[in-house]
Structure formats: C-alpha cells, structure tokens
Length: 108
Image 1: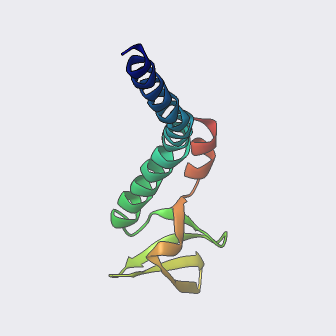
Image 2: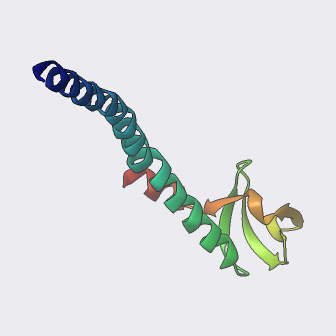
C-alpha cells in the first residue's frame, strides 16, 4: 500500500514542473505584447484615424520625406502641393503624419 502512495506522489510531483516550464514562455509573450505589440497597434490606429480625417490645407509629411500641403483628398489618393506650381499625387498610405507631429511622438 505504501508503494502505491509513493507512485501517486511521484506522478503528482512530475506534472507540476511540466506546467512550470510554460510559465517563462507565457511571461515573455506577455512582456512582448505589452511593450511592443499593443503600443504599435495603438500608433497604427491613430495614424489610420489621421489619414481618414485629412482635409485640404493640412500640412503633412510622407514616408519618403516629402513635406507638403494637402490640395485635394480623393478615395485612396491625396494631392500634395509641394511648391507654388508643383502638385503630386500620393497614396494615402504614404502619409506618415502631420508636419511637426513626428517630433512630438518622440518626446512622449
């Protein structure tokens, strides 16, 4: 009888360390989520809201580094005025943010 109790105790003890092996993996995933994934999703959503709210006269910067003023907004394209007689069409997805806004994001 004592032999069967020892086997049961050994079996119960073996299952606890197996679960404990997953705790560090779960902890690392949680850290990655809260430090990397969640803030990235928040910035991406804010940028999407900004792009949807673009209007004529907004000063923007593109991913390519072009600074310009929004002259027109179409469904998927924004017409930017870069100089007095120079307008370019860029995809809305190429807009990185409002002019001067990227500096404020680095300070937070």
